[in-house]
Structure formats: C-alpha cells, structure tokens
Image (cartoon, helix red, strand yellow):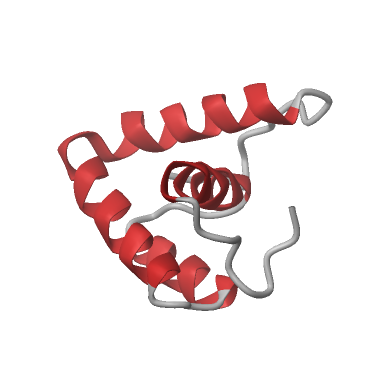
Length: 87
C-alpha cells in the first residue's frame, strides 16, 4: 500500500482518519484484524511511535494512515498516544 502516494484532506482530520483507516482495511482485507491486534498490543505495551511505524511497514502500511490508526486505537482503548507521536 503506497500510502505516501495517497493524499488526505487534513482540513477535517476526523474525516481524513476515517478515510485512511478504510484504505488500510481495503488494502489488508482479511489481515486487517491481525494488524489491529498487533498495533493495539504494541500501544498497550508502551511501544514508541517509531516502533509502531516499523511494525506497520512490514504490512505495507506507511505514512498518514499509521497516525490515523494509532488515534483510532487510542480512542477505542483509552490509551494515550504512543511516545513520539504528534497529534
């Protein structure tokens, strides 16, 4: 998923996040649940954002969608954003 080539309208960050997360789901298909579980665990375990970016790169996910995914998980779980991630 070459998400560096995708453009998201950041004037409405919430809508951009929804679009980015849907792009990840569409790209990963059945593997979406697996990535979600791994990243949720990494956030709960206190991983830094750079580590989460590294994990996502193995699935082919890069760029803005990783930020959207982390915000989404943190909203669902009540966790704080990973260290090194700017909101």
